[in-house]
Amino acid sequence: MNKIEKIKESINLLSDRLSDNPGIGMVLGSGLSESLTPLLNEVEEVSWDEIPHFPEPTVEGHEGKYLCGTLHDKEVLIQQGRIHWYEGLPWDDVIYPVRVQKYFGIEKLIMTNAAGGINEAFTPGDLCVINDHINFSGDNPLRGPNSEVFGPRFPDLSHAYDEKLQEIATKAADNLDINLQQGVYAMTSGPSYETPAEINALRTLGADLVGMSTVPEVITANHSNMEVLAISCVTNKAAGMQDKLTHEEVLEVTEKTNQKLGNLIGEIVKKI
Image 1 (cartoon, rainbow, N blue to C red):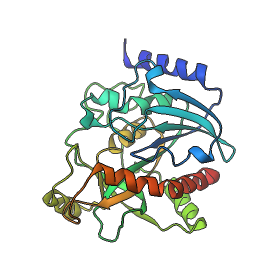
Image 2: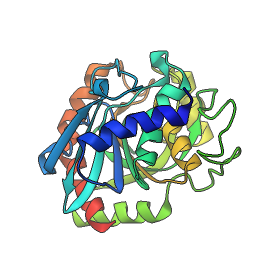
Image 3: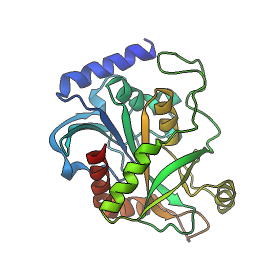
């Protein structure tokens, strides 16, 4: 069975289970899955283990399900959790949920993640709009044969993060009196956290944030001509800037930040 046939089977299940026809999709990262739940109305839920061909997340804080509902009178599809490359699955599995969102009708994709702050002006709990990225993973999710059904062989990433959506996010943050940072996100392969020397190298290259996700999905979304907005929750200072890094700390900070992030995304959706 080829990729398109698998996606069609996944979408058939979603179409049977979800009555809405959302145009805005979301991907919520580590510990951030509950940021929007209190704001949703008319919620329908599908677990990934019910959907044909879907991978299963293995990382704490990534539930692996879709929620469909209305957010400020707009229909949205929320992906709770994601697959990371370090989990050992092939790229096709890592980017599969984004492909499904595209073929389910999603044109605008709002993504969130937990990230370490490289920029010394960032503090844990800050929210930051990503305006560009550095792929430090050493690989690309589009490597291999290309299907023109998905997109061109050589997609342009000059505007990987949609400028209009960034402007909307900035205005939404101003309305809510949220100090919204902006910066460049660097992706490393993980699962080990970076060394202080690697963080110094990334800082020299111009990175403000570092994490182990998002970039493959952004590349995939751009390949399929989706408009992307990405927001990081700064959960810690990067290696060498504090004593020790733990995933428990990441989840603790995201839990405290969920309400602020949910309010911000809600305000963004209002303005889209």
